[in-house]
Image (cartoon, rainbow, N blue to C red; front, side, top):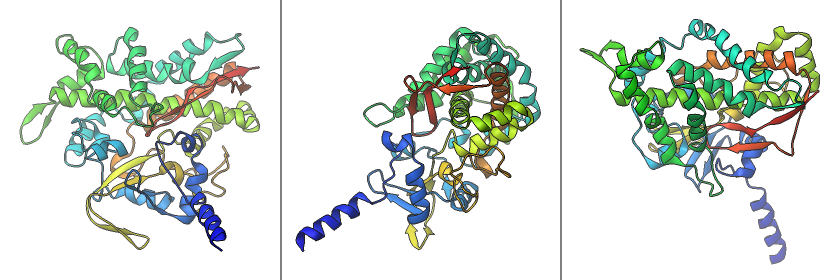
Length: 406
């Protein structure tokens, strides 16, 4: 009898749900555990790292909208909240009102859908420049050759970063996000980047050498807060750190998933080749199916209750929009990739106060990239021997995704 009980206990422990955003094995394919969480533990608690998690669409959406309870001002990633570190002003992802509303209002003047569409000729030129080099080679890398190159060129152009410095900055941002073998993210480096420290010398230069770029606009914008003032230098740096990081990393991951998913589903890729008018719909399904930023975190500002359980003020709530995007309660057969799915009302760009300001630019870059790739390479398969997945706690995608073209 004792032996039977022991075997039963082992089975129970083995079968327990465990989700850990720092676990490489889980990160390779988190969807099975997220599905179990949605069905068996819609309010999940991880006692190793001390956070709650919500995984169903309606629950995640509610948290995103209800900013006054689920706050970002202590950070929007788990490790930042746990360390209780100061957040650089201007980083609107990690601010609450009223500072958030002030800073978002200023930057939203630039990130309008119309102004993003005006960038299309430059975005297309960057894609053409990169992809034309690979024609006839029989291979190219969705990350190295286009996913990491074009977004950095675009953001660098917008900010006024010299082209010869852009690659080094992108590599630094990658290092500031990826988890190494220790299983712990380089938090201090990431926060330094988000505070805009790598851009300090450029700001000093631009103060004396204004140009037609976003950095100059930020240095000279005037606004009212009871009195007319300009942005302080630390606010400008916070803006630059956020725009450079968010504008690069998420679009890079989107393009990497584009390469992987359309290799996995050649029949759907062929549909796009025959009718490129469905490219925008395909981009939306890629964004839903593989959210480039699938894990967010919030600080719980007052006591709440979920599924009959009290959650105390001061707790950390992880909201899994990557899981919510596959919730069968919202999407029929949510684990199925289908570029003809309608409508695709995903949570990849968030909801409410923190809806992604760069959504229009990301969609534009995804569309133009796919158009230009298909002009040159209508068929490809992944070179799995040389593909490398990246591991971070905030974005998810590939570090290298070489493909063989035909």
